[in-house]
Length: 340
Image (cartoon, rainbow, N blue to C red; front, side, top):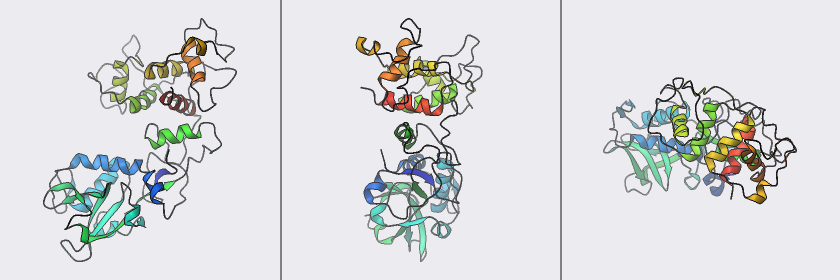
């Protein structure tokens, strides 16, 4: 897991994958920077969808981009980050970084292209490549070693800074590694006040989305539940999880995406999603006094304890009728992903 978490630089915009209060790190070692790139990587992945879109001077939409129109569009629509419109203005924001410290998502600037001075900008894509709007090929990847672009390199700015942890998830928390690992991998998100809100309950829709971000299922049928329109933000995930037989709907053809789930339901769907099986010895190691061997969810619940690497499920009672919290669900997913 990377040492640093990711967050929008203070004062630029709110971003729904926030971590802790801004404490800027002026310079990262190359190793640290390479370990903390998930937001930047998401920016690059989104930007690559527009490769081949033509260059249009003054263009700011997928019908045609100029260089700064492209970077502004990608930052805004991929990460919710507002940056200025022009190359000159973009060069004034963020933290300057050296070429050796570049990580995906950094803004890369060039000089003396169609005019003197800073005149072109792109997004560093890793491996010495820059994703940008070129007049010849439209949105394309170019190498910093390119005979044209290389000599015109003028510097780079980091708009996405790197910070350490959610302010309501201390490093001493049993679930710190689970939560930070899952947010590093964009499996679960935090909030724009730099909190994770570990005690908030998880809805059925959120659970489907979190699991499907791991499994990456692609449904064949979208419109199955009458209360999950295609416009629902979790519609694809809910459809995929239903087709996989992990979370089913109700007899009235509803899914109830805003309904909360119990810790017992959490155990059942996590066991199904990750196909976790208990051996006889493991099944006999039930630590929960209230969970008897004949209980319908005995194996899934005991599995939560057997695979637990956090300690959160190493308790005398399971409290299966309690709501599954964001913390407990994160720990369950983390444990399942690392189960052997």
